[in-house]
Amino acid sequence: MRVRRAIPLLALLMLAGCGTSPKTHYFTLSALPEQPQAKVAIKTPVTVSAVHVPPSLDRREMVRRTGPNTVAISNENLWTAPLGEMTRQILSRDLAARLRSDQIVLPDAPSPPGTARIVVSIAQFGSDSTGNAVLDGSWSLLEGKQQRPELRREVKLTEAIQGGAPGAEAAAMSKLLHDFATQIIAALSESS
Image (cartoon, rainbow, N blue to C red):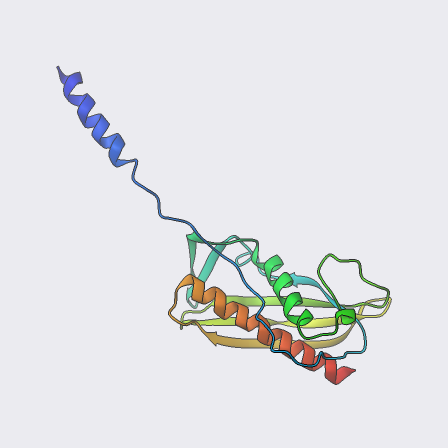
């Protein structure tokens, strides 16, 4: 008799455990369309050879800083690729939109002799606790056979996240990469 009463209760408990999980959303960074204008000339072709991102950020889950020593990692809001590789691809496309085609080598394409390498080191990239997207780090230009650093610059950019949703965060981060590419091109033009 007890077994018969326990079966409906057990079935009810099993059904309660079969609730739906939250829907997963995927996000990507994107190169911003460039207004038609003359392409910038620099002295040597370049390629973005590496983008170094801290392991705490270089993951599929979106990471939001919630305080000086705390973050929120979302299991529902995911990047379509690791953040470091996505950043390298989009930064390269933003540079390609403004440089002559013979002066930019896209990631993983064969580089002609004499191609200078841009190496990016990112300390922070994403939303901060104030509702802004932040890109903080540095980049170096390595040239010559020994690939010695010829140029090094710090970067610290901020962009307001409109609305605070994950899609708005991805859009603000894309804008930061566009602005970062603008800074790189300005520095390369000055050194030409």
